[in-house]
Image 1 (cartoon, rainbow, N blue to C red):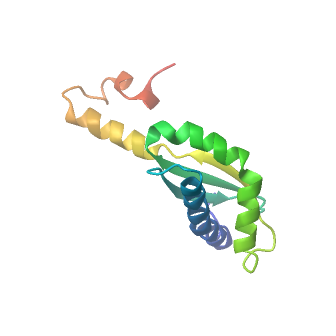
Image 2: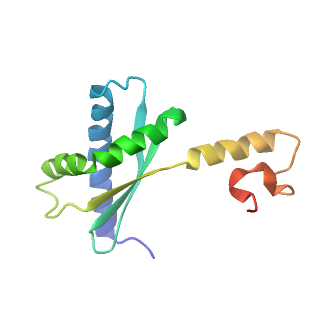
Length: 131
């Protein structure tokens, strides 16, 4: 189902402010050299939940940071509500996920540069492995 203009607008407002909040929190927390970007924010139709997809560099810190971000979700939501109080009446519940699409694309590029063919041999790509 296509997102409405209202959902897209709220998503972009949340995305812009979340980047600032998360990057500042990482720097204040002593995590220098960590880059957090919000790749996408999808808001549900009833505007009650916002799914936030994060790209974290370097990748080895992603799990640790995601746990910290999820545990601090109420504080992040409060800070976000303060920043958007003139634009939003109600702040949606925030759910955080790691966006691994860049890793996936990188894996495809590496596979294509090799002599093996990932299309004929699906075991070469993690997401195409048959379980």
